[in-house]
Length: 315
Image (cartoon, rainbow, N blue to C red):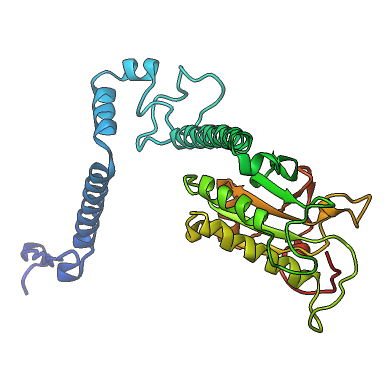
C-alpha cells in the first residue's frame, strides 16, 4: 500500500464566464447611447428654435455671467427667454412682465389711439359737410326759401338732414308718395351735393299719427312712409347722386314722432337723410342694425326699424 501523504493533490478550477452572451452590460452601454442621443437632439432643437438675439445673449452669459446678471436682458429674468438664468432682472420695477404682454399692450394702445383719431377726423369732416350744406342752402335761391323746413344735426349715426312738412307747404300730396315740384328741387340739389361725399346714405320716411283714409285695402302709414322714402331716393339719384351710395331705405310710419306732444303736427311728416359714419355703416353690413336717434338724443327701439308691418295711420 502506498502512503496517502505522498499522493499528489490535484485542484480543479472551473472557469466561469460571467453571463456570457446573456449578460446585462450591453444594456447599460445602450442606455448611455440613447441618453446621449436624446441630449444631442434637445441641443439641436434648442439651437434651431432660438432667435439669433437669444443665442447672442446665451453666448454673453457664458463669456461674462456677472455682466448679464447685473444688466439684465435675454437670459436674465426674461420670461420669454429659452434659458432662464440670473434670477430676478435687477432692472425690473414691479414684478416680471412677459415681453409678449408688453407688445400686446402697445398694440392695443396704438389701435385705440388710431380709432380715436379716425373718429375725431370723421367728426370734423361731418361738421365741415354740415357747414357746406348750410352755405349751399343760403346761397341757392331755390333752397333758401325752404331753409326752415331743412334741419341739419349730427347724431350717433352721422350727419342727418331732415326735410319736414309745413302746414301750408307739404312735401307730398296728401296720403300719397307723389312729391311736390319744389320738393323735387330740394332733393335734387341735396343729391348733387352728396355725390362728392365718400360716406354712404340712409333714408327714412315718417308720417304723422292721423288716421289713414282712402287708398287700397291694407295700405297703411308703413307702406306710405316706405314709398315716400323710396320716391326721395329716386330724386336724389336724378339730382346726380350715385345710386350705389344708398345703403338703407326704410319707412317708419308714425312710430318716431318729431313732435311727441302733438302727434298730428305737420313736422312729423318728414324725410330723414343720414350721411352714415363708419361705425354705423359697419353695423349695418354686419346686420346688427345700429340704434337710430330721435331728435338728436333719444334712441329708436330695435323693433321699429322694419320698413313694413303692423298697423299704421296716415300722414
